[in-house]
Amino acid sequence: MSKTKKYVWEMVVAALCIALGIVLPVAVHGIPNAGSVILPMHLPVLLCGLLCGPAYGLACGVLTPLLSSLLTSMPPAAILPSMICELAVYGFVAGLLILLVRTGSQIANVYLSLIGAMLIGRVVYGVVNALIFRAGEYSLEMWLTASFVTALPGIIIQLVLLPLVVLALRKAKLAFQP
Image (tube, rainbow, N blue to C red; front, side, top):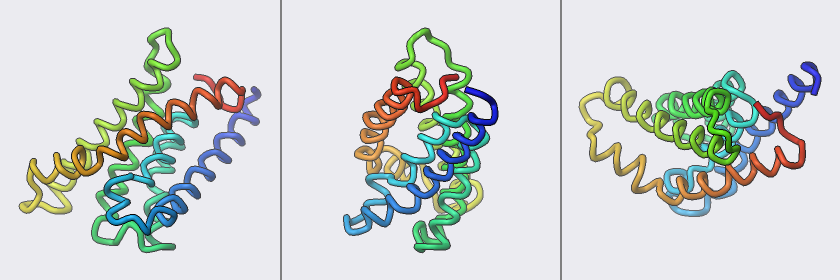
């Protein structure tokens, strides 16, 4: 794939991921607490990082919640700053790790990159809430509950769906292989 085609492909995929990050939360809005449980905005941001690399992953992680909040009021303004930080880290770290992790197995590379991004993003989410956005009122228990207990269905969806999509796109030669 030529450099020009690769850049165009990455821009198109990043734009599609941003659009999905706006549409998916609206699609699951009827389910109570769906944003916290299913994590619909996380899926396209992580996917963008895994497919397009750290720069596009970071951009997608910043623009998706910002545009979604402006267009749909989801996420609400009160949690928007911490979500921007969390999603920016997801996209950036997923993109960085997919370039760096080399196990000899594509599926292991994708899973290690995905899990690493998911863990680091959740740590950043907890730290920025504890130190900046909700200082003095955010506890370890709140972080564990929000990041792992409530989010467990979304985590499972991410771990099942994203590697399948990335590997299927690569197999169909519709995705760049780092």
